[in-house]
Amino acid sequence: MQGFSDERPFEDRLQLLPSPLGPAELLKDPGFGKVFTDHMVTIRWTKDRGWHDAEVTARAPVTLDPAAAVLHYGQEIFEGLKAYNLSDGSIALFRAEQNARRFQQSAARMAMPDLPEAVFLQAVDELVKIDSAWIPKADGSLYLRPFMFATEAFLGVRPSHEYLFMLIASSVGSYFKGGEKPVTVWLSDRYTRAAEGGTGAAKCGGNYAASLLAQAEAMEHGCDQVVFLDAAEHRWVEELGGMNVFVVMNDGSLVTPPLSGTILPGITRDAIITLARKDGRTVREERYSMDQWRADAASGKLKEAFACGTAAVVASIGKIKSSKGDIVIADGNTGPITAAIKAKLVGIQRGDIADEFGWVRRIG
Ligand SMILES: Cc1ncc(COP(=O)(O)O)c(C=O)c1O
Image 1 (tube, rainbow, N blue to C red):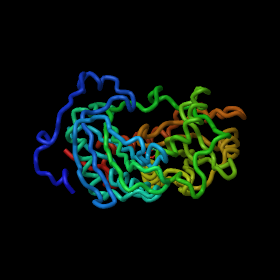
Image 2: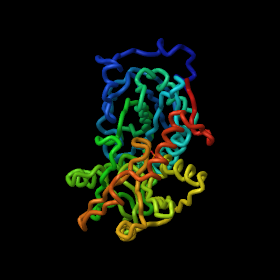
Image 3: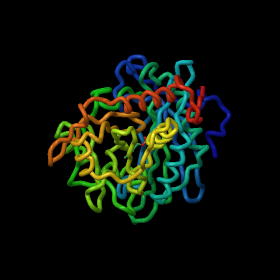
Image 4: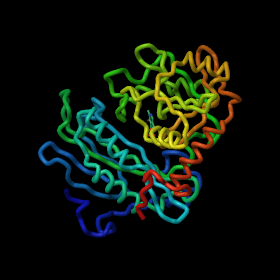
């Protein structure tokens, strides 16, 4: 592997292309996914050479052959993780090795090469260090977007023989426009996201492309995200377009759909299950139907609902809108269990609460 084994200091390997405004100005109100840092990582893979030419360079457009397989057959995967400025002045990543592993699982499902975990993590560390000025100080974070796509110029339908791995970073604040307010979600009874045997458990671009029409419908109805039901019976709650989902019952237990192969195995979902069980709370990973959700909300058995994922961490769900009428969850405000779970997770991520699970890795 070239590039990362290169002992030269970063500065000698880079052509710096500073942003015209620079971090200070852009970090005032970064929103989500609009403000990008100065650098990127690229690593190439070819069938003959494997992974090679790893580089950290100035962020710049990518040149692709118009026949590049990704443009035709969508062979692409990605990840999303965050780096935080901690109150003690260090920079930390949350469970980055889990993202590296999920990236490998997504690659396997999409017939793409396996990027070693150590290379994934080194790419992340190097980019975070060189672009550390772009990590917002207070509530925000640096959202890291690793991705890989098929670059071979070939129109036959088979796995590509060439790929490009890239890593870019974006300074982010709140994921939802409304900030901490409970979100409203749209129940899609028309479109599904993933079927058994398909790619639902992989983080591939195609899953998101397939979800966009439902997302547009959600936005037309004034909703923030879509709740997808299973593809076979249109009955069981699966996940949101970009987040996993939990409901909180009146006995304090949590229910979340199981990892059936059609939903993304969320790292935040896993962290919440671990934290809740450690606190003595019952967490059931079991199928939960939309009819049950409606009935439980009406009877008062269901007290709270929330969505979770790297981008928004935990977002309380206040209301579900659907063609069959709306479901308001309790009084529509964030419930105490959702708030406590969020506070604990955010506290660990930011180094303010002891990390008993070894989830937080300081890198500088
Ligand atoms: C479809 C989908 N489900 C769930 C999640 C949550 O996963 P994680 O907690 O690993 O970010 C995401 C976001 O990555 C997602 O895109």
